[in-house]
Image (tube, rainbow, N blue to C red; front, side):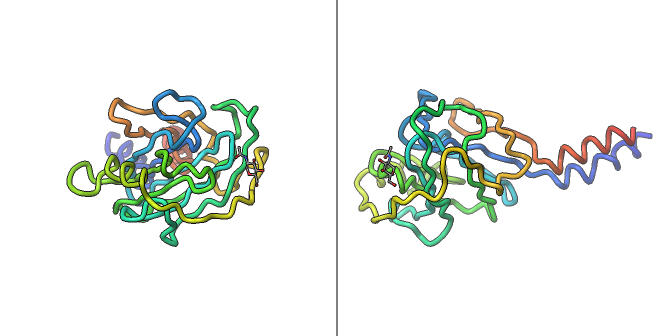
Length: 202
Ligand SMILES: *[C@@H]1O[C@H](CO)[C@@H](O)[C@H](O)[C@H]1NC(C)=O
């Protein structure tokens, strides 16, 4: 019986992938609308996804490099999202964009459309916690980095929600531990489905 139980759950564990919800245009210290990302550092595994949720103003998440924090590196670019000023900070159905993490290498990003890269609107995934290229080092480098010229034309409005967010995005607010690392905000749909199946089988 125990073996049966285990074999019912095993495929579920294999299908596990975490979803990280990251606020854009949200101050990670105050939790209010503001400059940057909340949280500004996460440690996802390959296969996990990052859902960027856009707050009031013009924002875009653009991948850059440690050496040039405010210049696109040709990687991920969410496009520009414009959210009206009167939308509450943690309103339901904020527009979002999803990025699937391919490997565990460090990735560096900035908020291009806000024009706030020099003010700390930067984000890191899997940044080394020591050595030459830390998340704090990236933010400091960004403060004096040349900011690449970007288009400010909006591609999305406050009322639209990106399809790519998928069923897993039923936006649980992002949670943070004391170190600023994100915990899993919501379970992926496939995992939930699997869990339900396992419960039914019992
Ligand atoms: C957002 O961008 C538009 C131009 O596309 C501009 O008119 C508007 O003032 C910007 N809003 C903010 C909050 O920067």
